[in-house]
Image (cartoon, rainbow, N blue to C red; front, top):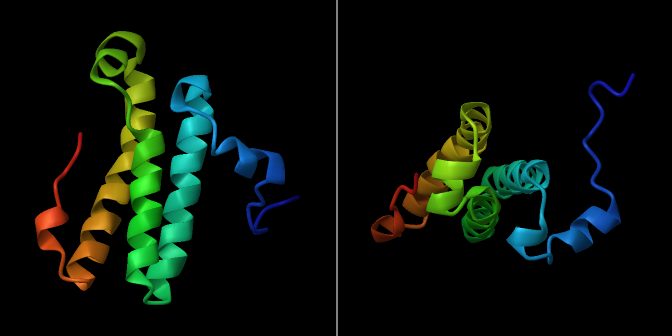
Length: 110
């Protein structure tokens, strides 16, 4: 089984990061959000806080939906999935910003 193996993201998916959000599937967006969180955590562990901040912000970019989409299109199960990706990103971003002393940048996005 593939348990314990590092999650490998194929190159075509990385190229897909350049796609506009409107062309991305719901699952794709959350996958990218999750990937950016993992990437940010690596930077954070290595004390590369500015790179971590960049990763977390990109992750939030992928996992943030338009208010209309959020209210009208996403079901509760989807919203729960979104929040499970966004909450850690927001918390980690806040921690990284505190590390570099940029506290005025900490504004929580729902």
